[in-house]
Amino acid sequence: MTTIAVLGSFPSMPDELERAVPGDRVVRIDRKGPFDRAAEAEVALGAPHADLIGEFLRRSPDLRWLHTVSAGVERLLIPEITQREGFTLTNNSGAYDVPIAEFVIATMLAAAKHLPDYQRAQTEAHWQREHTHTELRDATLVVLGMGSIGGEVARLACGFGMNVIGVRRRLDLAGIPGVSRVVPPEALADVASEADFLAVTAPLTPATKGLVSREVIARMKPSAWIVNIARGAIVDEPALLEALRERRIGGAAIDAWWTEPLPGESEWWSLPNVIATPHASHSSPRVRERTLALFLENLRRWKAKEPLLNVVDLRAGY
Image (cartoon, rainbow, N blue to C red):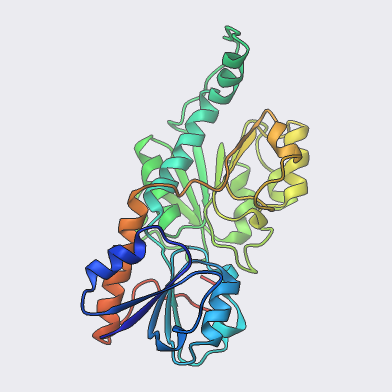
């Protein structure tokens, strides 16, 4: 029997897990505790709350594997994890690919077809026909970050006939259908100048923080859009805000913010060339089933002493 701790508030997840592993014990621990059963846990499935994870790990000295339900792990690179000998952190990469990639395509279509402009005109009962639409076919999409989400964005974009350029450290094209070429992060400004859309899908690490810099934004076409579903800090916020105010780029669809929740008084809400969403691009009822399936496969591997899926490189940060 394996004792599995479920950390955080997951509606129905502990019940589904208990039904899936009837021979194991599931322990539920929310952000306020109690933590009295933490020491029993051999495995943990957790929300990406560093305070909860840190407190739990301080009370579970023998725990050696934690699976986080987030894809990004920057908030979990805490001493309780990075300094624990023999510890394995796995993430939820793959569970969010479909909804997020579809969201990126949806925002590009909305921008190309001026749907936000028509929505505003509808609220004013204004018959607005002065906009000229563009097409995704033959448009250039630069995807910053070619992990599982970026790869799915590229695959869908290829279906629309887009020219896709990937940006990542490894320059091979293996396993990335639809990508015409791959360039290193150092070449981001050069390919950004070609982009009709720049999709930010990379993890937040010291190497990617601020990577979409003032220089990169300045090199973009006046009609180009930035779509950020990753982390706000990857993009230079003041530089992007200025470029949008001054109409030096076409617009931005932002789902990942520098401050979350986005304050009600923020200027971002009122910019007409911004599609603002509340970090919801991952939303889908099927994410939970993918999460459970991934965790159960890793639990099987853990018991069988086989290599786990989605092991995070704690030095690289993803």
